[in-house]
Image (cartoon, rainbow, N blue to C red; front, side):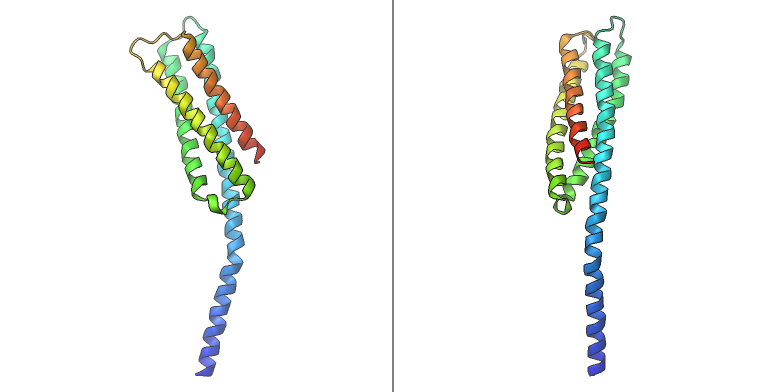
Length: 160
């Protein structure tokens, strides 16, 4: 009986030590995943910035067509959705992030809200039945979206 009890204690102790040894690697893996997600966010923000710049140029092009705008919308809207998903995943692992990564996540969330607001404003103008494609407000919305994307790029670049 004593031998059995000693064996059980030894096995249990070994399992606890093994589990404790795996905790830092899990935190390290989540930190690596957080870094990868931030890089993905940065890439998507760069795509949004480029599309916003193209949209701003389109407002200054007299022969621009709705399809030109729609093409840019179809470029940056999926990028915005990818950013939203990556931000949600980062938020889910917030407790395992370093203080710097948590601070970056908080700033990323603010920047993402700004991008979402600028995207909404832009869509409100583009979604009108008779939209003036050279409208100054449309250009301002595109510039606001580009600025928000640049801010997000700066935030994610500082964490790399």
